[in-house]
Image (cartoon, rainbow, N blue to C red; front, side):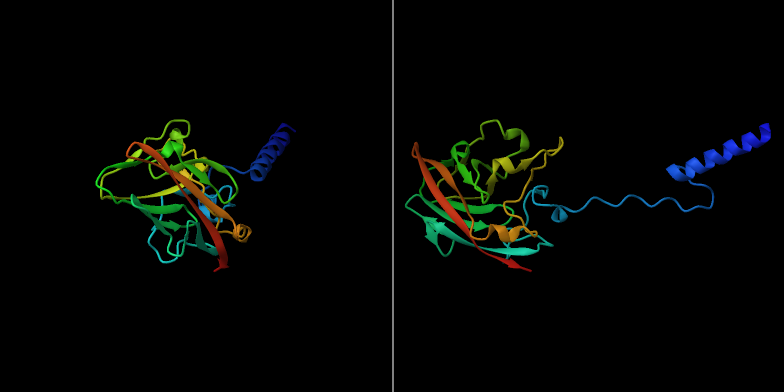
Amino acid sequence: MAIGRLAGLLAALVLAASVTGCSSTLPGEEPPEPPPPPPAASELPYGQNIVSGVSDSTSPAPGTAGALYRYRFLQVLPGSGTFTYQDRDLSFYFRPSPEALYFQVENRKDRPVSIEWDRCVFYSPRGERGPVAHATTRWEDRFSVQAATQIAGLKRYSDYMFPLDYLVDPGGSDRQLRRPLLPEDATAPEYSDREFGLDLVFRIENEARTYSFRFKVASVIPL
């Protein structure tokens, strides 16, 4: 009887192990399949889609690999078919993209000017208004004063900008993780005709001057 009960107990243990799984592999057995990798950022919904740094801003059609849609933009304030604007002090060139708003500014005078980042405002395609982040902004800068960028006389400066609130916690690393400016997944058509832009504040000859720029999503084209 004791031997029978012992055999029954061993059988029950083997059955439980087969149901719940076992971390060890018996001789001659194939090791278990590893878990599938996490989905790529492009496969995540817009609220979870994360980008790090920037891609090539000079490609003829801005957008990321694997995108479902491509955007076409217009500059509506000041109106320009070439995404440019200039006055006697500064010359601007913009390049909107789904990742961020790229720009280049040239100081046309022989004296320094500065971008007062802490006073600039970004108007997002989702109707939000808030502080501006750019290439050197990191997660820990969200509640601190961002240093101004000085541009020497007759020099050019290039950068990209996006809403500060789009920054994402990088988990202790120094990477700049953020949500893209516009989605390129199935929700992209919802952003047709939406406007976004920013107010850039420059200090020129000790005077604060605001330059306002607005852009419109002219069309969202399926790929």
